[in-house]
Amino acid sequence: MWKPPQRIRHETNPGSWPSAATAKKSALFSPLDSGNMHIQTRSWIPAMVPWRAALNGDVTDDVINWYARFAEGKPGAIVIEATGIRDIPSGPLLRISHDRYIDGLKQIVESVKKASNGETKLYIQLIDFLSLRRRPTKEKYFLQHLRITSAHSKAVNIDLLDENGIRDALLALDDEDLKIILTPREYESYQRGHRERVTDTNFPHIQELPQTLPALFAEAARRAKQAGFDGIELHYAHAYTMASFMSKLNTRTDGYGGSLEKRARLPLDVYHAVRSTVGGKFVVGCRMLSDECIDGGSNTEDATYFAIQFASAGMDFISLSRGGKFEDAARPANKQAIYPYTGRSGYECMPHFISDEQGPFGRNIKPTATIRSALHSAGYKTPIVIAGGIHSFEQAETLLQNDQADIIGMARQSLADPDWFLKVRTGNGAAVRTCKYTNYCEGLDQKHKVVTCQLWDRLDMDLPGTLRTPDGKRRLTAPPWGANHESN
Image 1 (spheres, rainbow, N blue to C red):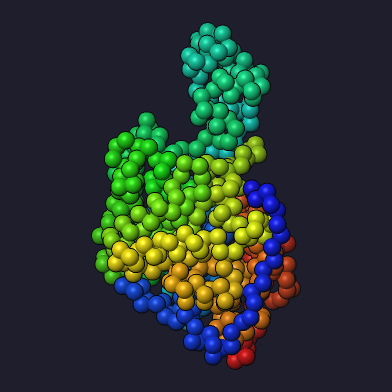
Image 2 (image 1 turned 90 degrees about the vertical axis):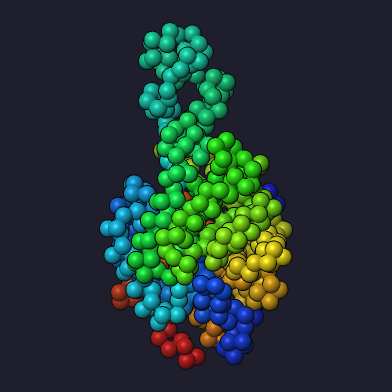
């Protein structure tokens, strides 16, 4: 992962913790009632992909146990991981692309409701993504993948009819020569693996995305409602399809790219299709970026426009992240796929404890506050979820008291300690296991390995009933907190 050149080491310091009486009076542990949204506390676990689903997208016992463990901490809401809306192979990622997935998803809902005693709302994040291939070896790219053209024939001075000769000649060249001969996209596919873009409108399936996606999202939303979820979160963030339509880099000329208005068109079409399917009283919100953090990409001004459009359309919440794009990601190793959290934009999404002067804490506060203020000035009270390096009660409470956000999201901190919310609410903050922001979890995610936290995945391995990773070396869930904790 990219890191700032300053390389300043930061340590988490959560400060003082509230008593149970103080926590009870806090904004963080107060309810939120806004439109369709009714959550008992303003605490939120954002979507995180733990790589525990079956290869065919089915819910597994490990997935159920994962979310039940978070629910034991009784946050106001949990958002289930990015769940694919297309019925296509996508590895150990949950899918909601067919009715056959409904029964498994129902089991997650039931387990969360049981583990939280009905206190936690459960939303599911719906995602679409385009095709992405692993970086090929040089031999495989030039002997199999590259489509030979007259430009290649001319560059190596071999007749176009002798395709094998052209391939062999290209294979023998060094990268400096290849960079001159190949088109920018060909060279990128050679160096980083082929990646589809929403601007590849020469391909019919890409051209037709504005016509196909609203129905795919709507059907997925229907299944989510049927499975018993309290709402859905449309994934309009990071490196994926919907965020790419919103990006300033989207130069489509068919009415779905270019201007802000046109870039907002498909996200609004998807929302309206979903709303029409699930009805007016079901929670529908989105996860979007406050800033793409890439050269030439969308910034907070763009995000403010989108947020106002979404609020005007009737979205129930807007959850803000930042960065996490393919455009500045590091070149992957051979046979590995590009990972959108390895460049500067990825760092802004998941900052590390080795950082610049600002550190990994609260890098999303200023843009989130700007967007929320603009929403309120426009007459909208749509709840705004903030996330990014929040790990202490003082941080969370200050953000709410200062009207910089309405709901506090904790991803890595809740992974480090799923009981954070319950411990703090009951006056046991001193028992919190505080995230160190080493991004151990992110490193596992990058390799599509089962995600755990280094602060607990080797603890109490011999406790009865401890579930382990396939290699037997790590716990699958955090150790349980003491049985009598709520009376402390």
